[in-house]
Image (tube, rainbow, N blue to C red):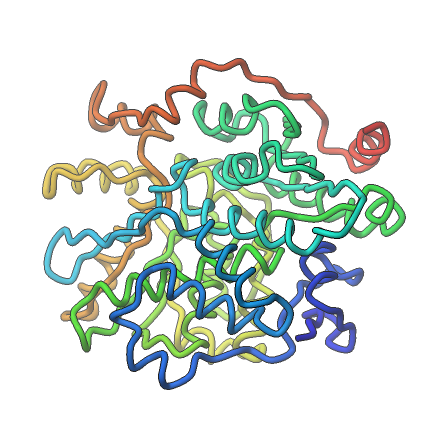
Amino acid sequence: MLYHSTTTPSHRVDLKEAILRSLPPDNGLYMPDVLPTLSGPFWEIWRELTFPEIGIAVADAFFGEDVPPQALVDIVEGTVSFDAPLVTLAPGDHILELFHGPTLAFKDFGARFMARLMAWLTRADDRELTVLVATSGDTGGAVASAFHNLPGTRVVILYPQGKVSALQEKQLTALGGNITALEIQGSFDDCQALVKSAFLDRDLSERLNLTSANSINLARLVPQSFYYIHAARQLPEGVKPTFVIPSGNFGNLTAGLLAMQLGLPVDQFVAATNMNDVVPEYLRVGQYTTRPSVPTISNAMDVGAPSNFVRMQALFGGSWEAMKERVSGMAFSDDQTRAAIRTVKSLYDYEIDPHGAVGWLAAQKWRTAHPGSATVTLETAHPAKFLDVMEAELGAHCVEIPERLAVLARQEKVATLLPADKAVFRDWLNSM
């Protein structure tokens, strides 16, 4: 299959170029020339399939023309080695727990798949691959874990100073080995702009053999569509879910749209944001205006210029009317998010993290306006990663810290402090 740029559709490349180069030279994003669907026979048996079997079918639909069947099986089975269970709080009110992977965040699905696909694509190469990633919290930890000590790779993670939680920061900075952390004096948007600037410098990109592990890379999105199908099969037969997605860079919601494109019956998507609400605003008024992000307690969603918006537009043919028909947008304040954390604990004895709490608020609002809907809120990270917020709302020791996170908490932070300056960042890369 060939992949084209969302900016210049005539620019087309093969799978290896799309995944390893990540970003087209025109600053668009890669999309498949033909959006795949899953055949009728799949949908006749999908409820009886295992999570890995669903993943294999989806991966084959996207990459089967270029990757042999056994290689895809190995990649998927190595990715989906943990579950994504659906938890019911109340009738019609469901939570999809995506934090059961090694770094306790939904990003584990995409990062582990990407690392394995990249390893297969570069199996005959003799050049070291440099993975650049900007993170607003969880992406960096998942990528660091997935690529840690993977032969032939080195990873550079950019994160905004003072804008990730303490335990998230340790996941980025304490592994060592082939993982390097850069603490950027700026916002996530600054980090993302630095990464994009490196890819758009074609000489630098070629010389350092750069690739991206952000959701600008299509290999991050496809495996995230696995769990939408897996979630829907856990609902009673005939129930069409409304997926409520805590959203920042909008890769997760885009993956849901890909699942719908594959044929998954979905009632609606709800984009739930904090006060960084450029997409809900677009859905409301039809005007897309990026702006500097503002810090919130749901830090992984602090994005003012979401990269995957252009993919969302492409999936709806550039039509605002078509997008707002299938995607609704809602935004909530920190005060509302804090209250939701307390309410969910009080009503259901369930600890929900600050990102899932934003989603839960949107789910309640949606079901109030649409009685009888079945909402599935994506709980994207374990609440232990946000202890300061959780303990402020629920009291000390309210959340048990999993051992794999506690171990990192005791390690030393190692990071290089840099300004949000493209020339300085380019010089640092050149000195590697």
